[in-house]
Structure formats: C-alpha cells, structure tokens
Image 1 (cartoon, rainbow, N blue to C red):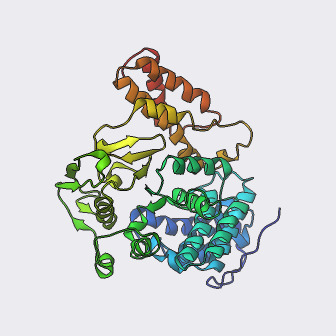
Image 2: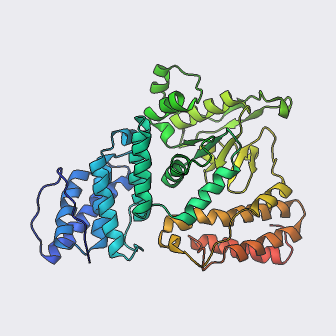
Image 3: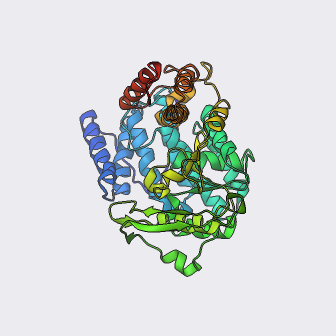
Length: 420
C-alpha cells in the first residue's frame, strides 16, 4: 500500500505511539472536531496535532486520515467567510489526506464522518480553492483546481450529469439558487471548465450570509441589490415576526400580478442575512428574469414561497401564480432525466451522491402526487412504475429507511388507484 506523505508546517513533529494510546488519541481528536455539531468552536490545530501523531503511528487507519483531512481543511478555511483566504498548500495537504483515506478504503469509506463523505470533501477542498481564485480574477488557476477535483476523485460523471440537468431546467439568463457544497462546486466546474450554461447565475444561499460573496455577486455577476456597499456589509440577522411581504412583477407577460404572502422567520425568531438579501434580489428581479431553486432547497431558505413554486423536475421556478405546475410539461421534462446504468456505478461509493441522485426519484413522486390530486390516478401509477424502472434500488439505494417506507406506501396507494 502506497501512502502520500504530507508536510504541514503548522503541526509539530510526533513520535510513534502504542496502539492503545493511539486509539485514545484518535477518540480525543474526534471529540474535539465534533464540537462543531453543538455550536462550539473546535481547536483545529490541537486536533490536527493529535491526528498527525495517529496517522504516523497507524498509517493504515482510514478514519484517522479522514479526520486529519477535516482538521487541515478547517484550519485552511473554517467557514464560508474565510474561503477567500484559502491557501493552495493547505488545500493540497487536505486533498492528500482524503486520498489516503479513500485508497485505504478501496474507494468506499465506511468509517465515522463529520458531515460529508471524503469524495465530497475532496470536491469541497478544491472547489473552495477554485472559488478563491475566481474571487481574485484568476480563472486559469480556478480551472486547474477544479480539474484536480476530477483527477483525484472528487467529481463523478454520473453526478455531474445530474447537475447538468439542473442547469438545463434553468431558463436562459436566469438565476439559480442552491444550497450545499455539491451544488456550488459541481455547478462551478460545469460552467467554468466545461463552459456549460455560463448564462445562468448560480447563487449559493449559504454564502449570502458572508460579507464578501454578495459584494462579489454585485461586482462580477451584475446582481442588483438595493443597498450601498457599506449597507450591504452591515446587514445582519434580525428578529422577525410573520409579516406581509410583496414581490412585484414588472414582466408584462404575466399581466398585472404580484406575490403577496406572509414572510415567516426562517430560523427560530430571526430573518437571516441571506433571507434579507434573497428577498432583495427577488424584488429587484421582479420576474424580468427567470428565477429557479434547486429541488432540495428547504422551505425556510425559499422564504416560504412554496405556493408559488412551479415544479420543473429537479428545480422549481418562481411564478407569480399559485400552483402553476403543469402536469403535461412536468411529465415531458421527466422523460429527459437519464436512466442509471449498471455500468460505471462508482457513484454508489459516496453516500452524498446517493442523497443527491435520490432527487430523480423525488421528481417523479412529486409529479405522481400532483397528477393524483388532479384526478389522474392512472398517470400517477404509471409515474411510480416508471421511477422504479429507471431508478431501481440496486442502482439508486434509498438514503434513509424512512424514505423507503414512504415510497413503498406511495407505491401501494398508486397501485390501488387511491389518491396520493
């Protein structure tokens, strides 16, 4: 077994430890890293030093390499705010740690994780470094970073095709709002390296909470905000009660329409910085450009605009008209979703891939529920049968038992001609 050596200046040299001591040290380092789950700030340098001792003592320990990579990654940029301070040397070391983890795992890691699979962590490490270079107007270096993500196992072709379909559903020159590293970095790869649908402005809703990202969207992507640069930097989360809100319409195609709804607090009793900026963008666009949300953006991050979301398959388009989803159009779009093949199933090695690809299944079930509620029970049954043929469980496992149980119940109702 070949291991890649990592030299990290911030971590001190370490001696080899006894096996029992190594196990205790790994457990201690993991406990330190997991503080982030309870809202505490881990000491990534201390955890990294412990993990460096562990991987030197047990170089065949995949879990130790995974956590070691996480520690270096967090030291490099602890959150979205610090992405623009990423250092390529630390990104390289992060990547090598995850590559060791995957090599030891025969490309399928089954150990304990903090949040994301090591394949996804590879993608996020190189994607964040690419974003750093994009921010600094260095496109060539950004492309090189994203190609590193491909070569080192962070990007899967089957999953890339999923995100290509997401872009296909987005209207020309429109906005696409997403959440999560996989969306941000796969879309960045497709647009920057493959030059695929660069006309779509992709906006990460999580990154709207940072100070640098909205300003960058304004300066480099022409996104309009009703705030001066100084005001934009100062927007913070505010206490909020459900309040009437409006998105005007300046597109004559829709006639004299606008959205009026109750805007609820998105998190506890607060409206986050990202919520306020999203509302501002939508009010400025006013339906003069098409606006889309990826299908798995939760309701609170869409400002509870679900009644005005028109399902397009893997995305939802914001509409000034309630319940605007067309059964005929949706079923037509679903036919364009690819069939998964028993050849090239490497995507199954990453649990995050499985979760994302399950959106294929959800697109069909959404269509089935809509058609059933419109009295088209035969169409609903056929849609459920189609999703089972296109995405059988051996090629696309359910990522949660509860989801499988829900789908099984839905299937039984459809077979009986019951309303879904």
